[in-house]
Image 1 (cartoon, helix red, strand yellow):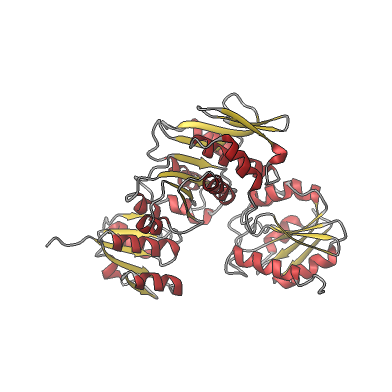
Image 2: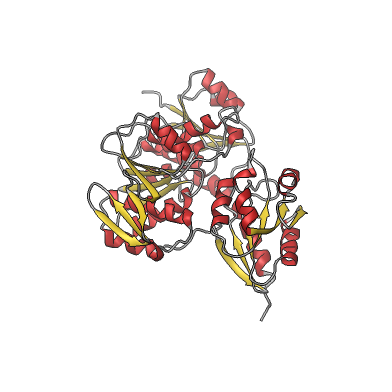
Length: 451
């Protein structure tokens, strides 16, 4: 009897649990190992499919028996157990790489420092509304591996972080999208921007002349990287204004799309999502759908009726004539830049959280133009206070969401907007950006008068 290959999955979250179940289904001798505690829903999933697992630490001798390891994206390459695996020459791959080995579905893969979640969900919405058999995976939706194990989709729309791209080797995107690249997660990449950029551009690996690469040609980092690029894929850039090679652009309020198959357009004011950043998201999603030969009438309708993503410029409520907006998903400086760009009223801006080596000079001009006050909300706000003091009329130092919202209510006047767009990760005071956004919304709604 042939000995079964040994698969070890590191990390027991959505990605890891899905990979472990797929491994079991495909006949691997599978072990899932988590250094922390596995959430009950994932423990139940593993148990239901007979997957052996351990939690609260890695048993190194068992992990190092692996023929193949699938690493969850949250585990850095510098983790001791990963270093030991690589020293032994044991292959370490991502869940997306592993799942891709067991499906021949078309892959629409989207990355970028900002906008990738909205673009992914918008692309999925268009394809779903057009009647295609499509799955949603990556940072949103269910684990790709779990879907490959039990479902059969013709197309997957996948949001990919740089962490997920790090350990992809043979996987291929039929359509690859890079929205933009700005400094983010540099603590994971030796504080070297070139390492982060290289991780993002792994999305183009293995593309052929039959594949497409969609990107914002106004991004200087992407543009410079493309100059050095060798890819067979057809380039499909988008831009706010027409360029000689633009596949999508705006002309007198009309968004035009040019693909090898057809040329079509939609009035910009018909797009369901407002703001410059959402124009780019809509262009990328529209191009992806058009390249998949979806009829332009169906793309137009879906671009018109899509509902905004939660925690991304999400309107919460008006309190005492002040508009409250939840942009908790803005975990880096560039994302906050786009939020401020869309503001049309005097703004009280909530910043703060876990700083990832941020350079706040990018938003300084917009802060001076649009922000009347900044409320800092974090365990340690010294960097924010040092940078913005003297650049706005008022700046407050708070260390809880409740105190931050109370300060905003005190400062804001009728006609103002209070914008939670923190620029930073949430892990100093919150479990996640979703937790931060939910608690902000609850605090705002608690100020509404009861009937």
